[in-house]
Image (cartoon, rainbow, N blue to C red; front, side, top):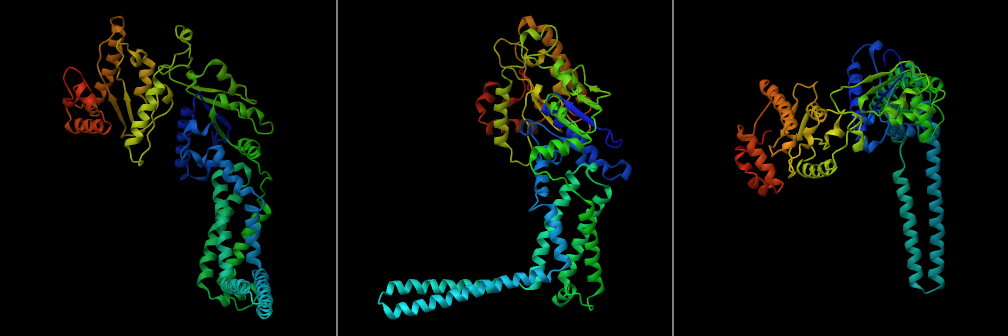
Length: 511
């Protein structure tokens, strides 16, 4: 879609699923960066928006997340400190640095003269007071003020910069500001915001600024002064370097015009969303796109995990103006739409979320985060909340402890399928770890339980054939790791209670 210049909105029912799709899109863009101009895609043409906390936006997704992109661009669009000011200041600095330096020198001299005048005045007053009165305390206070003025005058003279220092300090600051703005524009500006020539020109300007900065440091100060005094004895490479840099800077000043917008809402709605080629969001939040009246239509809505959408929710992206075709993607064997109602379950229109799920999620999350050292990321969620996402390593538990022996997790084949398919299939080194436990089953559910356990057994069998299944009772290292983790979590009593130290017997625990 990016290569064909086709504007697309890509939706999913949940923030988790949208974040996963966004990660895949970023991967495609990174792969295309090494291709030719005809196959290149750019981060600036893709926008992700939604709830930042619920999407768990990481550093990678921040490249395309709308709110963080607006914050970066807003700094560059500010009239006093942004791109326009930095560009004009750099041009002025390179065209004639002598005039501003002379003004700076005059200001320093004026400050010194003021301090000297104040010093003379204080000295005279001190002498008069010492002759007329015998108040030693007052005389000492005036002498102290006199010393402060003298100290301040010396500091001003000492901190006065030479022309070389003045030029290089200002040059480094402006070059850094311009680099920040250029890098932001390359990553965050939609390609339709300006011409490709301007993007190329910005890249060339950074190279020229770096080259000129290195050259200035290697040249004597006399050459630098002669350059700005227009003397004829300036070395050719120095004159040519500043001329090339100025040509590109003036070209950008004339051709690269940014919109005058400084508030966040104007930047995101009237600029970024209207110019993006691919917009990523949940189906329910796609209503924001209805307000883009002047933008080119989003002709193709693509909905991932479409079966999880309720009918009313799926209509939101389909009602966007200009929609011609729609692509709905899903797997009938995964979870359908979530309806928190017992009445919705029999006709198959939805499933009820397990009540203990969030509590289990919170408890496991606290335990895991208390153990790991921060060198890797850990996500703890219910199976329902993880549909649409994938990770390299998946650990999921089917342990049940209810006295009634109800099947719980295993009662729904679709939920089981979701759990078994969350490992990243594109990665050769993926792992799915099971934490299993066999408990007595309610006689009324024995048939369903047997069927579900057969499904799990079949999956384990396939993994055994590929050499991807380990059982704690057969692997001493794995058994020791389980025992060590349980001890660290103060679970020794549970180990003894469930006879886990032997990792075997009638109660099976496989990983």
